[in-house]
Amino acid sequence: MPRGGMDRVDTVSEDGVLQARVAAPAVGGAANAALIRLLSDELDVPRSDIQMVAGATGRQKLIVVDGISPQTIAERWPGIKV
Image (cartoon, rainbow, N blue to C red):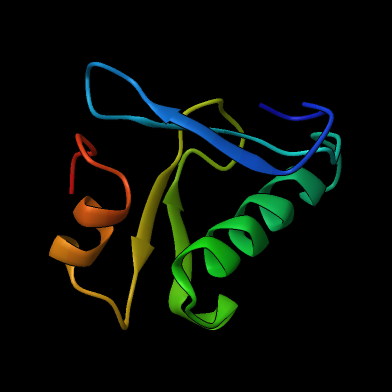
C-alpha cells in the first residue's frame, strides 16, 4: 500500500499474501523501491537479493528472495505462500 504513512509489514492475509505499507508514493518506482528496502530489512538480506518479478505497476507483487530459505520466510511470517 503506497502512501501508507510508514514502512511496515502489517499481516499475512488468509490467502497467504503478505500485506505491507510504505510511506513512498507510487510514482517513478518509489513505492517499489521502498518495499524492497523494507523486505531487505525485515529478512536481513541484501537488497540485491530481492527481485520484483511481476506486479511492478499493480497492487499485488510477486517477489523472489535469494539467499534465504522458504522455510525461514514462512517462520518469519506464518501463513505466507512461499
